[in-house]
Amino acid sequence: MDQTLAGRVALVTGASGGLGAHFAERLAAEGATVALAARRVAMVEARAEAIRAAGGKALALSLDVADPQAIGPAMDRIEAELGPLAILVNNAGVGGQGLALDISVEDWDQTFNVNVRGVFLCAREAARRMMASGVAERGEARIINIASIHTFEPKGGLGAYCASKAAVGMLTKVLAREWARPQIAVNAICPGYIETDINADWFRTEGGQKQLKGFPRRRLAEASDLDAALLMLAGPAARAITGTLITIDDGQSLP
Ligand SMILES: NC(=O)c1ccc[n+]([C@@H]2O[C@H](COP(=O)([O-])OP(=O)(O)OC[C@H]3O[C@@H](n4cnc5c(N)ncnc54)[C@H](OP(=O)(O)O)[C@@H]3O)[C@@H](O)[C@H]2O)c1
Image 1 (cartoon, rainbow, N blue to C red):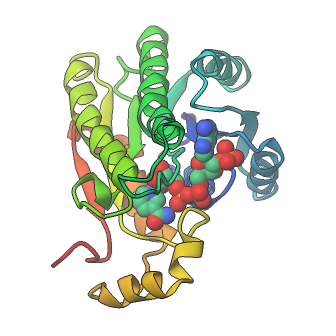
Image 2: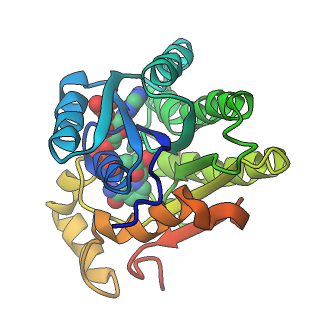
């Protein structure tokens, strides 16, 4: 098979499970050397081992994206062990639930520290390195932010999450503009609901089942539904795609 990402080094944040682990596997299958990062090191190590067992190249590392001091050293290690970073998938995210009258300041701040500040700091650190290494000049630099349909769609009880994902959408466009000249493509994927740890409990409740039955296709989407967008935005096809937000939601946001 033609491996369009052969020789590229990718970092996927939040790769200990859910969508991040899936993205890492897909990028590795396409030939990329993948660094999988999250706080639960044993889980990222298991995911990296599975990729290596399947013939791919992968490195597991510990990274809390809410810790500004941790991001540079993590990327130092990736560059030292794997080579210059070409692809960043800013996937790490938390749910940020709570009605506006109830949510604590700590929960609000944690949602923004992971979902927005973490995305920003990882993107900035990666961009600096992509420019310094020559990866950007070669037209290979890609930043893919994982936003959500809640970038656009409000939902009661998810104020912090919706606001954080709206911020990711706008940040994607601003960074794409600032880094257009140095040729770093910055885009976002806005998925609909896909069952992972972030929402599995919710979809077992009566409210969750009611929401699901209200979707036009009465089902959740699957992680593999995001593959085509992921690989397009990571690879050569994204040469002229930057500042774009791609919604993939199985029609869930249609009225
Ligand atoms: N599933 C959906 O329906 C859906 C829809 C739209 C958008 N999204 C977005 O997709 C992304 C992945 O979510 P998911 O559904 O795969 O949820 P998940 O299964 O809960 O995975 C979240 C991942 O983020 C990591 N993470 C959380 N806080 C972190 C931190 N401070 N530093 C580093 N990693 C951290 C977790 O790893 P550790 O706990 O090991 O650190 C985990 O690997 C999120 O940005 C989410 O908002 C999901």
